[in-house]
Length: 272
Image (cartoon, rainbow, N blue to C red; front, side, top):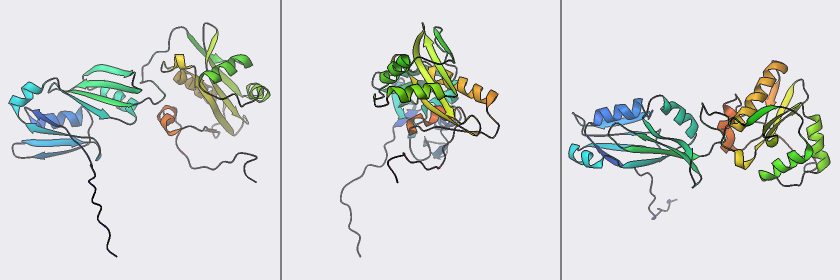
């Protein structure tokens, strides 16, 4: 059977072509300093070349000293997944002229100035944790305590949880939790993390939440660090710690040693 030909064009990839004074040195910089793993060079001596990130983001360079002198200050924007990890790598090597920061349009971005004078902005979605070295606000206290029901309900509502969970069941979660890590500022509850489980073989991290006004300040990281320290002190070496989360928060929990696993679950009452 003859396969029909698709007449519609499909754009595959777009790559900026930057004029430079030395193609080989530029590619070395983008490989060693900015960590782009793939490259190619054409000509001897090189007159053109490029780098790419495993077949996705790519930049080409062409030998044109005159145009390169007039192009200093131009910029390139690169979309990144797991931007926090890349930022950590670049902090020790690259000339970062604008640090990682949340932007009004919903992305987090930072900018590097390469040795040709081009500005390279790396941009990604907020991944639920701050880059390494982020300091907790001085007014915030993180520790283990049993919070009041009303305070917990107000915090959960602030992050968008519906009020479907009844007061008795939420109170039961507070009462039966193995430990609860709370973040407070001026005696106000601004963050919470529950650790549930049997206290022997299995633990479950539930409802790690931070008030929207206090997010992106390292509070979630501080609470998880406190939970991990508690587990190291109190849990059996063979105990398992689990949690459920969306893909966008995967990088946040991976920094504490969590990894993806294949499993099964069901909600009681939905399946018979």
